[in-house]
Picture 1: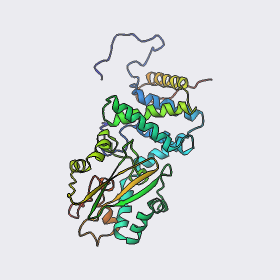
Picture 2: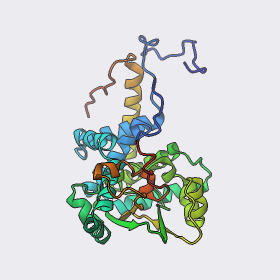
Picture 3: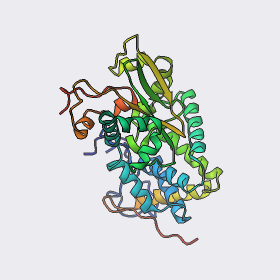
Length: 219
Length: 109
């Protein structure tokens, strides 16, 4: 119970029963969202079942495992990789993962010479359809403002140290264009199956703030 | 217990609700996603300038504020109706015994 609970009876007369068992009042934003949803539903502008379906998809089915499958295919099939680099929107769309708002996806590959990292400096644009909802740090002011100024420093805080000879490219996402990093395939992984490769791909490695697991780390 | 799961896509159910509402109305063509993103970015920048804490909850508070204003500007909702419905939901929660589903009373307009 909250410490500010009052016991003196200052309730209105119409609130005459159930005072000991009534539910806790939700927070202000919860009530505001309930008001919005009720009004838009009453006006026929949204369908509650469609809202639930979208939420269920993002809570249970859409997430980094989709991106990991795409990366694993790119690691194992040079033609797929070439097509992904040429037109990721089409390749990913053909696999059935279209964006919520028709946004484009651009794949950028890490090489021995270049490390790519993705940000949305303005808000939180992210390849939702293949990575799900962005992590809290991706949405933070600290990451958004600092990764463009000091990418190597920020990457180092993520535990990713980029050698000075390697170039770091920072890609700023927009409402129209989202980026997917193709990390470098771990050493010794050339004979693994697509499923085994996918297990090495981490969410952060597809944003550029992490590296794939090594063969030893895979469980 | 209802401990937060750091890997959960949404920390609070209302974050998921507002995410879905914003996407569904854009998909229906009431505004473009670019228009939404531009407004949201402006709200985020304003909050940062005002020194609001750099937290996930602040992010969604900004999202909600932006969305409410967008609904009003687009004529999809009006402040008076939203306020009335919020009051109705507040009343419904206060009058519903704990553990029972909360419903709005039917209103005759």
